[in-house]
Image 1 (tube, rainbow, N blue to C red):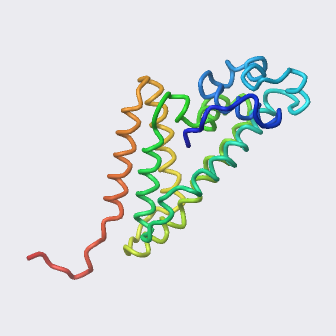
Image 2 (image 1 turned 90 degrees about the vertical axis):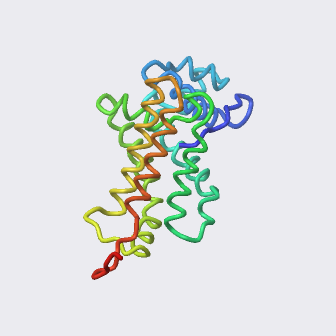
Image 3 (image 1 turned 60 degrees about the vertical axis):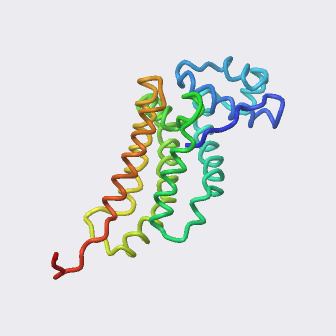
Length: 214
């Protein structure tokens, strides 16, 4: 989702600093490779402080997914595409906004919950569920604009706003995987461009029934 700023260990309470450390370190190293010591060092807290706030690393992972959902929701709520009048323009604006934040180091623009879900879906079901809540919760914010765009363009389809919203996230998460596989963001940017082309074709206005070509 968003490209957050680096956390500052001297700022905020210990719990928040640990959550911000998890956000950054897990995206760079993966959940399994990230130790409690890594998190404490990055957050600038003691192990005693860690276990005061979290029973274990799994509890931290669940809380980190929820924190990610909370902070990214605020980030996207303030994005400029919401000010566009046409719902389809808002949908394309969302895609363009997602493209604009694919910048910098891989760990700075890839998705925490996508990273964790790929790694722990079997071994930590509770973290998987927290990641799913974040991903699908974000997708749901797109559904009103998709539904309004379908109505405005008289789109009758066998797919739903929810399924298309989920597909946008599938493309974005896949784009992050390709960026990790290549070590480059270019392939992710190309994937987002293809998503925009797909949406443009999908929402092309159908010709009125009975129309003829000259």
